[in-house]
Image 1 (cartoon, rainbow, N blue to C red):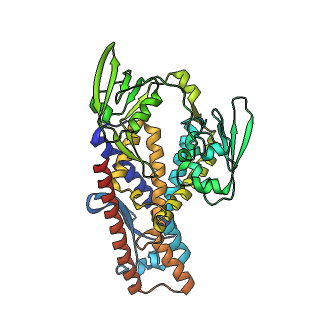
Image 2 (cartoon, helix red, strand yellow; image 1 turned 135 degrees about the vertical axis):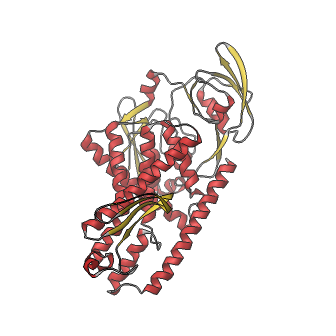
Image 3 (cartoon, rainbow, N blue to C red; image 1 turned 120 degrees about the vertical axis):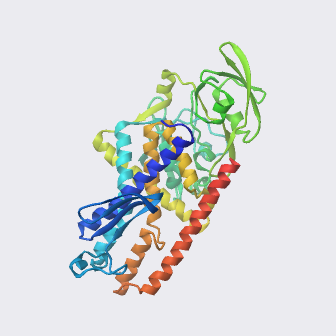
Length: 454
């Protein structure tokens, strides 16, 4: 869809601007609905580069720094208000009306994610069949009686239709439960129930499906390059589609799995690849890019995928597609599960159960935006849905200056029967500013460290 750094930046700015617009539009729409006058609707901060005054008095602005936005409403606490407009001031509205205006922004992000996921399910999301390879002896999957060729059909009663579903649902399904039920189906359609015990589940929560012995079955693919990601390590080294790999790091290869394993075991190391192209043997050198897994382990990636015939594709993949009505339900379920997963991730970072190194900033998000855009429209829309959920959850955190902080003020006002004093509001907002600024700097430094290390 897009190539190069300019494409990555464009994909990032487009996605971010759309998500900010939807968020602020939620605030704007509910504010107008309850009778609050909106003075300015801004996408971005700083000096305006485009502005337009609407007939209703709202100034629409696109500002220079596109890392946020705001809706400025008429409010007696922020400046003088004429007597004829005082009924349109935000502070004059009831507590319920003000809370509705505040919560509308994050809800708009969740609504967008729901609509995007629903659209994706209606169009059809290609996924890998959740069929399992043989687990290693002693792993959770092996102890549960999993055997090669079985396909996961449900986890804790929830339907599993793709390998991606299984990876996504696994952490939430096993966390905090006494027993977990996994159901598989073989080639003959016979189902088998695999109960997982508490001790097994506890040991499996951190490693994910792969660390628990569940491995995706893949058909035996020849070591022939199908696609080369633009600007990847492989692309810069000169690898081309239809190249047949003969040796990697001095080891002969006969299957694609062998290629993957050798490359994964050589992050940031020089690897020589011997290949055959148009009947001629060539040699190229690559340095696999280091990719860090959730468990902290690093693997190598060079940016190539195998050649897959249509027959193999039908055997290996499934189109996760619904009717329009079913897609709406499936989109809601997906949005809900990802919201809970995001909340849990934030909670683990706050409590120290997960590393703050996982906290990404604008550089990492821009990289993900570019990667998803290069893969096509559907992956890009999926990326936007995921970031929209993250934006909604982030804004609901009870930190002053965020929507969650304002909701916390409203909760205190409801308990006390009166608002907090201006002095306390000012003090907590300064604290919130420094906290958010610190988080932004930390995430940006994380991005830089990740960029230079990988």
